[in-house]
Image (cartoon, rainbow, N blue to C red; front, side):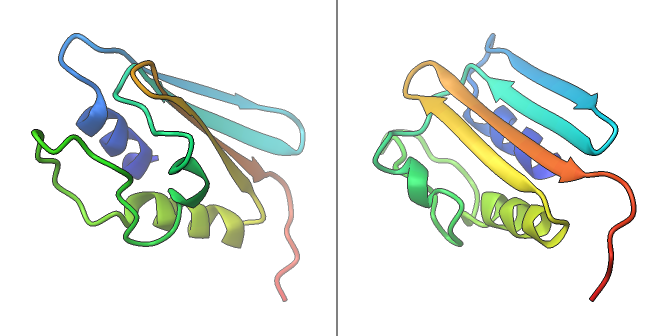
Length: 108
């Protein structure tokens, strides 16, 4: 969740908005981070969770980072049997949802 919040803060302009939603059912935990940031272009979105992929950035704006945050989130979520979904519109914002299974998991 820290990586998702860090991205939201990094790419949301001053006076923007960041929302966190958390819910659970008997078998699933869901949390999402939504922002009113710069958004991610459609052609970049499918590969945004790959390591070192920073998407396309405004050439006039310097943002720190290696492009590993979403890759780490994606890997950790997958290791726990969950899934990640990213929705984004350039100039409107981004929403990242993470589903994690609850209950006993059988270790292999």
